[in-house]
Amino acid sequence: MSAAEEYAAVREPLDLIRLALDEKVYVKLRGDREARGRLHVRRRRESTRRDRESNERSLDRRLTTLRRGFARRRTINT
Image 1 (cartoon, rainbow, N blue to C red):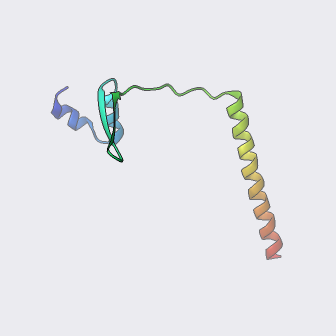
Image 2: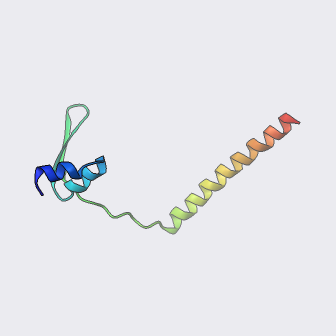
Image 3: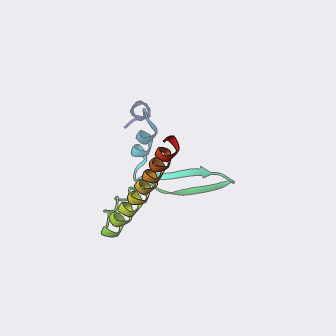
């Protein structure tokens, strides 16, 4: 792919990353730091039973908080 074709193919930042996969990259970071290496993709790990249970507990806590908030509003408004 020529430079002109690559430029035309980059319309969003993710397009640039997609073109750079398996290429050597240099990233300049804050504080005069830098990162160099080969850009590769990590597979998304499948959720485990523990993750699902944790998500359910988190959702339960949020719902409980919402219910308490609604109950308080009802008592204040009546």
